[in-house]
Amino acid sequence: MEITEVRVKLVANKDDRLKGFCSMTLDNDFVVRDIKVIEGTNGLFVAMPSRKMSDHCPQCGGKNHLRAKYCNNCGAHLPEERVKQDSKGRLKLHADIAHPINAECRKRIQDAIVKAYEEEVEKSKSPDYRPVNMDTDDYDVPDGQ
Image (tube, rainbow, N blue to C red; front, top):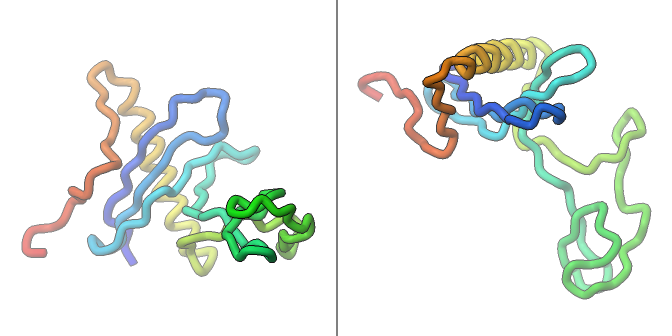
């Protein structure tokens, strides 16, 4: 697997740990969006895209986020102990949509994204800087593909 492109959109809020959003193209064929660059206690790290987990109301079957106290559909009070814990005892409120399978792949992805983030930060210091447009699908595709 080759990381063929990384796009970085910087986040301007200086007080927040979130520093940017990224999209990553693999082998000029597959795009992963909504990857986050976050400032942690040991430096920058990459958070893969995730979604909020949900369950269903025992009364009406309506779908609700795990932190909801009342059903969005019927208003019934939802049970308190609906959230599962991970192996470290933390509440599991989000599930990864895409993620690396092993540490070697995670390191390759993190290194490429952090490098692209740092390059984007340097570019942003230029007076004629224009942020990357993350909303288009015009990814770099080699000739003949």
